[in-house]
Image (cartoon, rainbow, N blue to C red; front, side, top):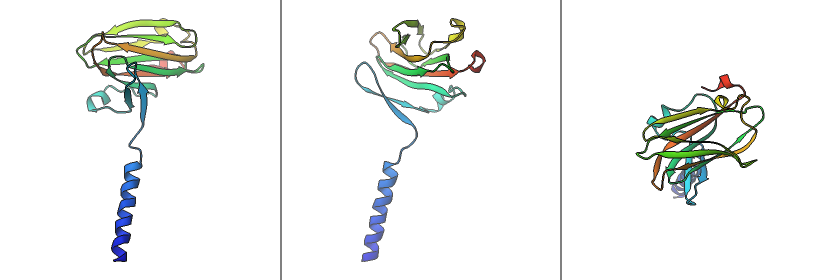
Length: 160
């Protein structure tokens, strides 16, 4: 009888340990609707095929109506690339803002089922100023579906 109780307690302990352990890197972001937006490393195989090979400064799953990406650019890695994959049937409009000075870096759009890529060195030969940045995504009140990647590099050549 004591042996079966011991086995039972060990099984409960193993279950609790496995249930409480993290299953990969997951971050919680918030959108303008105060809903939680999950930011994961791999969403699905289709999205995985589009993932860049160099380290990310952020990766945001674009769901809902007004998700945001918040990230930091440091002085040594001030060249930035943005890639947005629009998997929805709606136009996604977005703007990049430097939170330190409140200035808008640029605004653009991604057509439905298209991919958008922008490198900071096309307009900012010395890279972007260091500081905190926010990208706000909008879809004219419709729910969007997509993913956004941000990459940093110390040189323009480091962006792919």
